[in-house]
Amino acid sequence: MKEPEQQPTRFERGTDGPKVIVVGVDGSQSAYRAAAYAAGLARRQNALLAIVYVQPVLPAGSALGAPIADTTGEIAENLIEELRKNSERNKGIWDLRWEFHTFRGDPYNGLVTAADELTADAVVVGASESAGHRIVGSVAVRLVKSGRWPVTVVP
Image 1 (cartoon, rainbow, N blue to C red):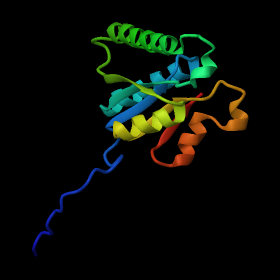
Image 2: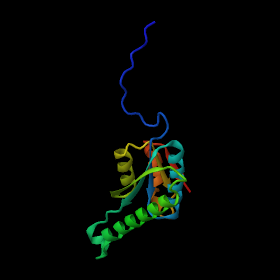
Image 3: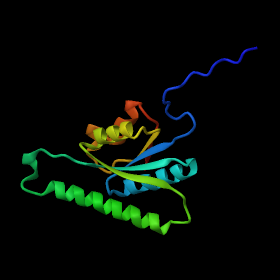
Image 4: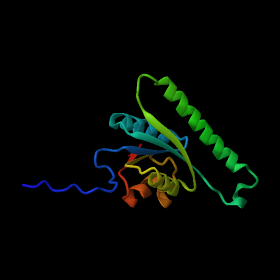
């Protein structure tokens, strides 16, 4: 009996476990817990952890003269510094591949863009700590509803 010929396959998400895990961070405690959870998942799966910070873009008039771009850039720098410190502390204990990325936009669209561009197999986010999200809907809920990746929401 003749063996069937194997056809070349296109990229498929999540077939052999996640290879790229995207985690959204914004400096909140919930985001730090999500990053810790995602780091453990990435370590166990030998996946790349893509840590993503989305810098908000505000309309020019809403800043009232405040240097918003400087502030969000400073947040990104602080997040990178914190990640480097933690990485150094755990060097030799945990073997984890990670990258830090910044995107601009609103958090939902920024994470969607990041997950698409980085070919994410999974997305991890922290639960919203904002009361206003009960009305508008949180980033986590919107990501889950999009149905494009497995999404884990960490409390």
